[in-house]
Image (cartoon, rainbow, N blue to C red):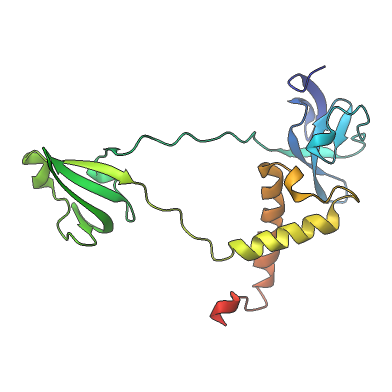
Length: 204
C-alpha cells in the first residue's frame, strides 16, 4: 500500500478515511491533545515513521482535527493593474500614462484619494478620466508579529520536552505540525499576560 491510499482512522463521530502521513490532532478521554501522523492500522509520532510497519494503536483516542497539506502559494506577476478600491496602505503603486509614471508607497487612503509618501495626490478619480491607470508594483508587507521570536522559542522548548525520546528534531516535523506547537505557545503566552506584564526585553 502506498502513502497516497486512504486508511481508516477514528473520528469524533465515527470512522474517517485519510491519507497515510496526514498530520492530525488526537484527543484522549482525559482531554489532552496530541499531534500524530496517520498510518495503516494506527498512528506514528513522526511523519518519517509512517509506513514502517509498527504503528501505535488508536485505542480510546479520537481525531478532533485534521491538518491540511501544505501547498506553496503562487505569487502573482507584478507589476499588474489594480483597481483603486483594492489598494491598501503599505502597497507600492504606480500611476501610469504612456511613458510617464509616478511610483510611491501608499501612506493613507482618504476617501477616493490615495496618498503616497512623496505624492499627496497619487491617485484621484479624475486621473482615470484623463487616461491614467493604476498598477500594483509591490504588495503590502506582512505585519510583523512582536511575539514571533518568543513564540518560536517557547514552541521549540515545549516540543523538546513533550516529544518522545529520540524524536526531538524540530526540523523533522512539517510546517503544519510546527504551527500546532506555536499555537500552544501563543495560548500559554496569552494566559501568562492575564496576570503578568510580558514585553520584549528591548522595551523594558
